Image 1 (cartoon, one colour):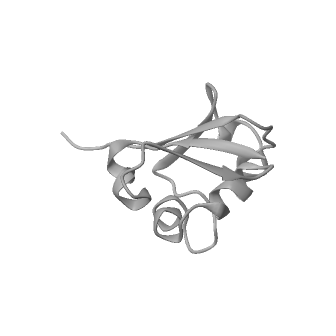
Image 2 (cartoon, rainbow, N blue to C red):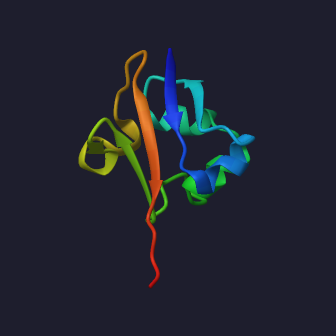
Length: 88
């Protein structure tokens, strides 16, 4: 089942410059695991959890407010990855 993953500009170099990639998976965790390892390392820590500064949205909902990496997906869903930005 294909799921789209929209990437911000800062992560595109780790996906061959792509603004959006499609991967198969029935949960957010499966989709993240299917991403290129170089990109996946920017999103998850050594234990496989989503890094604190990374937000993943399914529609308007942060997956942290749903079932996290266990959040179920259906064919055609789109995830959007937004890393937190800090500075001044």
